[in-house]
Image 1 (cartoon, rainbow over the protein chains, first blue to last red):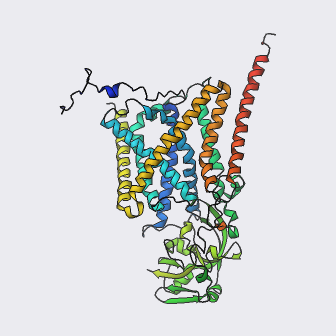
Image 2: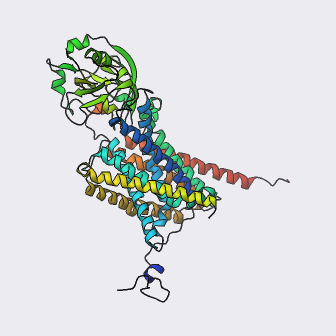
Image 3: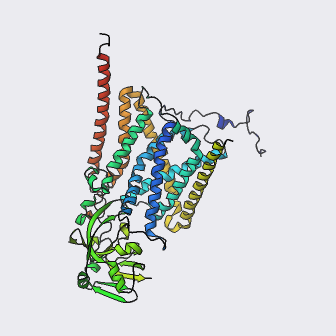
Length: 388
Length: 153
């Protein structure tokens, strides 16, 4: 066994395996790559990842808000904006990330591969960042496409991996800060006569990212739907001009929702029970609110329905009550809760865009409230519970 | 150490510390939620993701660049590189849509109902046209410069 710090071989005190590059080791020269280019792409990608992380936290908050800080009703388009930005930025991160990885790919072949413990940890942190980032944007896209070729629950993994991604990004910035500052302070350099310049790479890459963004944003901004060639959703093509994410058939509520025995019960200090005919005789209010899905698409629609607060007050509740609404369906999205300003503005919708809502949209009644994730706009309601 | 260097170091330590804590938090919660997050399968996916990029995507892109540098002359190469970068990045999103097109449970979802193959071809064609138009403009400008008589005639 060798004493610590004692050279194993050679007179120089260095390990020959690590000092002389083996002949098979790739030689990588690229006049285009360099800190000036990488730092500029990285700056944009860093901002995009930051936006994705913050908007992701906002979306996650919708599912489990603190009781003392309920999700507000204003702005009513808040979730539409934040989740639209989240998904659009996430999709744009796919080309951005590829461009960034392309700009540093040569460093994978740096010799020696490891210069010591600190260098090994640095390279390990880069591997974590690359794997976690690519994983996050690709699995995020698969979720939008409703494609789940994995055994884990997407929501939790996406959320915890977001912490890994943002953490490894911050660590990477901390390690590379001097190089980033130097890169940003360095001019991109003159155009190469032989091929594309670094500025050209930024322009071509930026154009690619812009094309992706412009051709997907139409699933959030209806005016851009005609150019939404890469948008996974076309919201206006849904029934009654609004897509559904879970059909009545998938939720296994087709017969229960159309049953003559259907009832809506409201449980509070007292109990109210409504048949379908009684519900339809209740006074209604009209409103214009968006349905904004966690998958990024959204569309504004005209709704008519019974103000939820009216029923809550009739069983002894108020705007400060905590109200949970329950669906005929069973499973993860069979109920949701609301309180405060969202409760004040919530409707039990009977009509959508001037027509009686269809089975897939939540017939006989569904919840619609402002600034709320689509998955929490519970459909096929059958029970409402009011607690103080 | 100057005050400026000290403050940069402080920022790096702070960022690094927050970063390590965030990674630790995420990893810890993945393991505490193991029933739902399936850490072993997740680790396999992460390694596979890294390998697909480093062993497949990156070498193919590097190989294309290498071929382009040897087969295409400078000025045309510049525009072809730009077309390939822009088109490649757009395709990196488009191919997934083509692959999943039509594989949804109901038309009511209004999901993946477009002809994405045709849409991507249209976008790539537009990128090629813009790129080649730029090349033609540059060639035209260069030939006008050559044919212009000297200023003193």
